[in-house]
Amino acid sequence: MRIDKMLANLGFGSRKDVKQLLKSGVVQINNVVIKDSKQHVDPENDVVSLNGEVIEYRQFIYLMMNKPNGVISATEDSKDETVIDLLEMADCVFEPFPVGRLDKDTEGLLLLTNDGQLAHRLLSPKKHVPKMYYAVIDGVVTEADVEAFKQGVTLDDGYVTKPGKLNIIKSGIRSEIELTITEGKFHQVKRMFQAVDKRVVYLKRMTMGPLKLDEDLELGEYRELTEEEIEQLLNYQQK
Image (cartoon, rainbow, N blue to C red):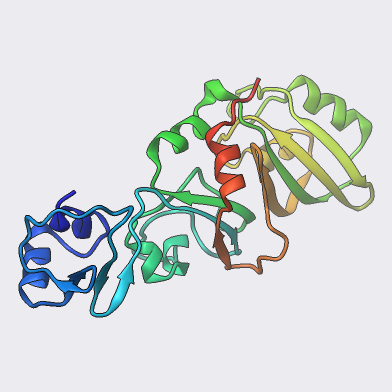
């Protein structure tokens, strides 16, 4: 791989910008200053540094975030803070994007990556990837609701949802539940409960396919996926 292509892929600017970096003498390969943009580099074996800091080349990045309330699942927005705004610059250079969306007021598991093929597989309606949510509900959730969700409920626009698995943790004026669904319609969990005359007052995504939210992550924090988690995602196929 050419050194200018590697640096451009890592987000250090356009090919033109990278050429200027190289001419300034701040790029080294194996402790040798490189100014030729056509110089080839082996990202797996050569040590590349910029201004004395070693650059790690990876094609893809996989991040798990515990999304906080008030932040939107988008790469940019003119008014609101986005999940990308919460990332360190070293991760932003890979240009990750959120896989799917969580509502602005919804917390929990959000995967960010620049692996478009993986994102497509996880979001494809044909794959039926399950997502489990924890929610607090204004209203008494009953076994009748469990059965209704199992059959699929009719949303406000007439759409009938695919079956959902509703588990009642606590039933009362403020009920606590877990709900697993395989779709991602707009505001789906909230609208499913509206269909049975109840209201979601708190919502948090806990799982997505084989990926489980790391409970050690505080709201707004994130970490890279472990090699095991990445392998599980890449090999995941819902039957």
